[in-house]
Length: 468
Image 1 (tube, rainbow, N blue to C red):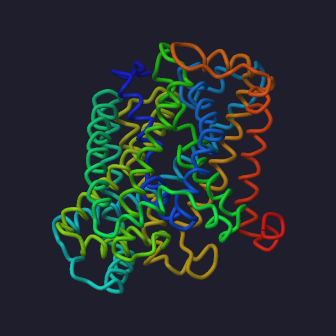
Image 2 (image 1 turned 180 degrees about the vertical axis):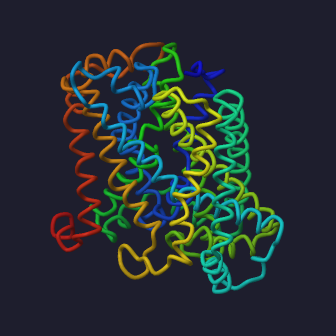
Image 3 (image 1 turned 120 degrees about the horizontal axis):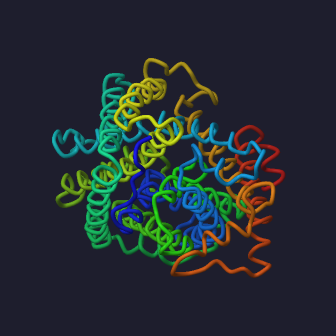
């Protein structure tokens, strides 16, 4: 077995773990659902659930990794009671990692392609909104473009992982995350100083709870819960592997708060870029997933130095997507290294072929395989893969981590508390109310999120009667 690496610095751990959490969900999904669900009031609800849901679930993953010094390949076996078989949970979690990469590589390729197109081709400038929309649809329909940029995203991500934890993942992610923050701050300053951006700032920063009632309070609450829960990439062991690489100098409560803080800053900055820009040019900020590829190119086209701003925007989107790719690829490769002692280079090469092959259905889902519509007309293979990850594997995986850490049939709450509170920094309270919450209430909420997602997708009438 290869000698196990550790992070060269605590900053490296924080930026890489944050990079895993910071992804397309922050910079693509968060701004448009904030626009859709009422702006600042939605943000407040989201932040509340990030603290009460995301933070304790993140601590559970970190604790399992640090206590066992392994990723999911061997962590549960190290910590579970003798004679139990809880470690079989690693297989659906590993499947979740691969399933996530089956569509995330394609979407990451979109971001990289649009950066290239905006920075070096410039063919999106001077077009009407309808023409920009048609250009995006043409991109989806081009199998060569879809597969080519998916392969590029895969090769870059796994190429970084092949260099090792310190020389590849840590070193390059540090630079990438640092540049991401710089670009976002510059773009945010540009956005808030646009003429007419003040109305967007009011919408984004001044809560108006009347807007929540227009959408239905329960729908808004579930949207906030889902965003807070899924933004941290929990449930597939991606955070477990990074917990396994760190020491006990600092408490895991402190480390988890650092990750959540950075993740939140990026999401809020993304909203600060997109929402004031939309208001400045009379664009609906809740326009849905097409906001990034259809609406925003028109916004940038109207800005002074718009092409430069557009290129910078898609560059930071590419960095955000790539940071998640690298983190999940590290989790996948470390699984096989820990489990069977394979060499890193061989694992990377094998996974290049595996990931490209597994990603082809999604890349071809809008062209060659467009006739496959899993959820009816207008849906694609990506929608099925996304639903299986976001609404099935992530919540059930997180439910397992929380139960495993807090019940005697698993690792046990006393050992969990001992691990997360070891080291300097903030400690998780041992008060009975807090222990009761993480042991019983938190799993119940995660289970409700899981059930709600399935009802909303497959039984909308029943969902409306229960939660409407």
